[in-house]
Image (cartoon, rainbow, N blue to C red; front, side):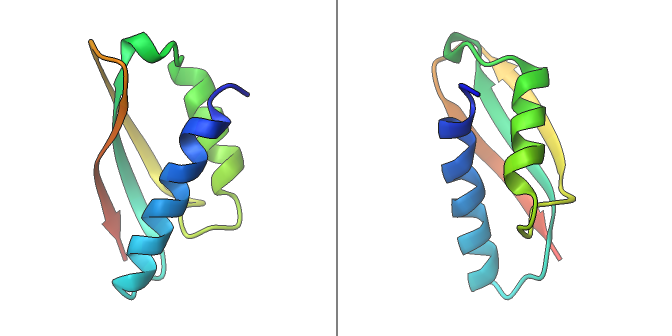
Length: 80
């Protein structure tokens, strides 16, 4: 899972921020993914699903937008 090292810090960072805000869950995560990262959408979604199990992001809807670039950015996330 090439995407694990990319997604794990994103999940941890969002969880940390959401906890600081007093959230119980994260319902949506928006990512902007550079096409030069070599990440495939299906693999990214599966990795997110696996790594978010047991976290406040477990049932979050993942929105992915690709752009010509070489990074992954957190665009937004919704907390409840």
